[in-house]
Each structure stands twice: as C-alpha cells, then as structure tokens.
Image (cartoon, rainbow, N blue to C red):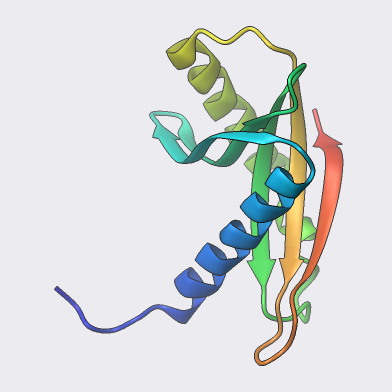
Length: 122
C-alpha cells in the first residue's frame, strides 16, 4: 500500500463531501456517490422527490485555467447523460432527470466557495 497522497484527488474528495452536504442541506436525498457503470462514473445522484438530480462536481484550487464549471464540456456532458441512462436502467428508475453542476473553488489555506448550477445541461 502506498503512503503517498495525491493532493488533486484529496481536493476532489473534499469538494464532493462539501457538495454532498450542500445537497442534503437543500433537502435532497443522496442515492449514489461515485457510481460506476460501463458508460462512466456519476459523482452524485440525488432526488428531490419528483426528479432525479445527477450532479457533476468539479473542484479546483484556483481558476487560472478557467472556472470549475467550465470543465464540464459538451463531451463530458454526453458521458454523464450516457452513464445516467445506464444508472436509470440498473435501478429501474423512471423519474425525470435534471443535470446540475456543483463548482467548488477551494484555494489552498482558504475557504471553499460552492456554486450550484441547477439544470446546467440537458
């Protein structure tokens, strides 16, 4: 077992924890976290009771190369939609789907800022 850590992975995990807490505080119920299927991975899958809310979490320590939300390209959105279809089939869920992006900017030594973009793509 390696004793080294991956700072980017650790930052991403902390961002996902923050995003999951935010969703719960908004009244959503978390159904899956880091769900993996043949079509790809879904960061957070939740429900608000009437819709399935699929959340892509992007965490960055700086926005020198663009904001965290800008990292969700059309290609990434297509992969998320495909993985969502697989998730829906796997669990037999027929709820309407909303795709959100939770963008976390968390500077080293600073406080995180979370932006929740509801319906960020279709």
